[in-house]
Image (tube, rainbow, N blue to C red; front, side):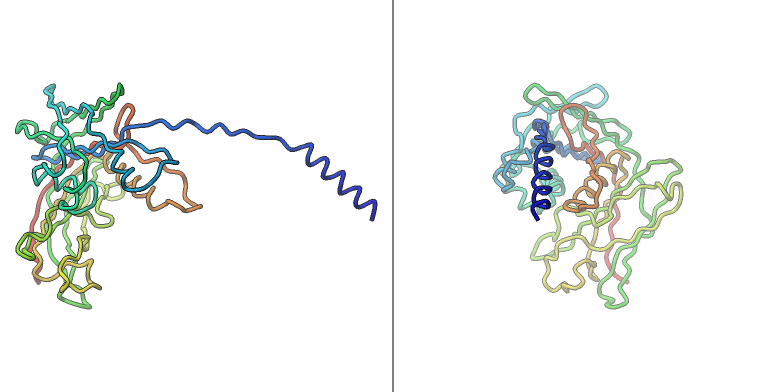
Length: 316
C-alpha cells in the first residue's frame, strides 16, 4: 500500500513538473466597412453601409442600428463620369429605392421606413443601371478607401411561365418556367417574385422576395434549356389563404417574376453567405468565409442585376 502511494505521489510530481503555461495571442479586432449595394438595370443604385462588430460586442437591436454609417463619401463611376451617392433617411426614399432596401434587409418597406438609418443613392437620371456597362462603387470612410465593380450583363427571358395546381388541392400551386442558358461558363441567375393583386384596398406586395434556392448557376447544365419550379416565399397576409398552403400561390393570385442575370462573383456571395448561416453551430461544418467583391478595408457585395419580367395570373 505504501509502495502504491509512493508511486502515485511521484507520478503527480512528474505531471506537475511537465506542465507548461501556454499563452494564446488573439489577433486584435480590425473594424471594416460592410457593404450591401444593389444596382438593377434601369434603376438608381442603393447602398447600405455599416461596420463589422467585435465578437464580444452586444447583439441587441440598438447596437446593430448604431453600426450603420451615415458619414461616408460614396460615389458611382460609369465610363469615367461619377456621381455622389448621398445619404438619405429611409423614410425619405422614393418607393422604388425603399423597396430595394427592404429586400436587402428582408423586411417589409413599411418596416424599413421606421429604421433610423440611411441609404446612399442618387436620383440623377443619367446614372441608372445600364446594360453592358461596368459600374464602379467607391467608398471613403475615416481615411480608408474601398471599391468594387459590377457589370450589368445581357438579361435572359423566361419562357412558358405557368401555374401548376397541386394534386392535393387544385386551388393552390407552384410556378414553373424555363429558359435557355447561353453557351458560356459561369452564368448565374436570381429568381424573385411579388404579388400585385389588391388586398385591403392596396397592392398586396411592394417588394420582391426570393424563394429558397432562388439563385442558381450553370456549372452542371451550361448551354442547355433549364426548367425552374418555385413556390411562394411571400408573407401570408390574407388569412383566407390556407396556412398549410402558405408556400403555394393561390388561384387568382397575380404574380410578377423578376428573373435576373448576375455575375458569377455576385452568385458566390449569396451562396457562401447562405452556407455560412446554415452551418452556424454545426461541429461538423468546415469554416467558410463569405465571398466579397470589395477591394480595400471593406467586405460585402456590390451586386448588379439585369432583370427580365414576366407576369402571370394563377389559373388553370
